[in-house]
Amino acid sequence: MNELNPEVFRQLQQVNWNDIGRRLTAYALRRAVFYGWVNGDSQLLAGRDFTIDDIVQHVILKTINGERKWDPERGSLFVWLKYQVRSVMDAWVKGETGKHEVSFGDDEDDVESVEKSGVPAIEDVKDEAAIQPEEALIDSELEQETKQRNSELVGRIFQAVADDPKLVELVDYVSQTGEIRPRFVAAGLGVPVDDINNRKKRFSRRLSQLQLPDRLGFK
Amino acid sequence: MKKRRPIETEAQLLVALERFFTNISQSEPIEAIDEELREYGYDPKALGSQIEVLSKRALANSQLNWRIQARQEIDAAKEKLNRFEYMTPDHHSDRSFTLNSIQQLLRKLGSQDSQLVPAHFRNFDSASDQDLLSLLQELEFLASSHENHED
Image (cartoon, each protein chain N blue to C red):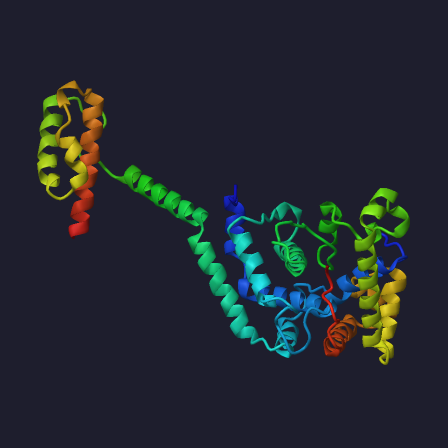
């Protein structure tokens, strides 16, 4: 049943939706740029007829009417909404209906909620050795597609940072340490957090200026 | 704090880079977010307002919202009822006086309130003293409400 409990509803009434909506749209934009679903000239996802803000509005409406259930005990609304946006975005790009839900993922603000949530962390992503032979047989074609896509995306990322030593340094640091929280990355590189945030923006800008990949990130 | 393992595969690398480069926190200044939105052709103020209007409308139309409002109205009415000072006290025991008062109030209120029609046809003879007293007090409350309304 799509019903919110009154306390959740009360908390949703207190939210600054204007602020959250802008942040979520920026988050969705960053992801779309990262995966080559949009470039700097468009708000439309490549090959699709919906915009970035359609996804955000969809998630907000589903949350308010209780179809996607936020549980305040498991973490902040903003973190939860971000991962709903991620889930819907991936599903819509894949051409699915966005029925599946994820709960939480890594977040600078809410590391504890990640650990409670059980969402796969980076180290939980399967590597080749962990795949069972039966699965490998069934999914071999898909597997191959995914590997090829990953290689293309990683190649695109390196292309975007190639002639910017500060961005190369950043990508190298994240690659070597697996650290994704800006303040820890900043501490590791011995620079202010603002510097890291500026580099992140520069990265998105450079990535958005590259040609979109020939095919969508997902099959 | 959870210790992160080094990245070993391309898939892990992609996930790490995606999370690092795309994540947004609530502590990031909204001005920086707006600047980014503008780069992609959004008007941040218009976008924020549109989402705010949409959210408020959804909240106002929510079934839960109507239920909360109805509950509040019921609670307010109950409180008003509890604070009302009846002319006829709870321990009043003169049945004929009670019946007479009920008839008078029904005549007075009957033409103004169609909801009272069933009360006109009630068989008062079979009602207990307590039922009659309760009905009288409800009519007193209604009469008072009508008077206040007219004032």
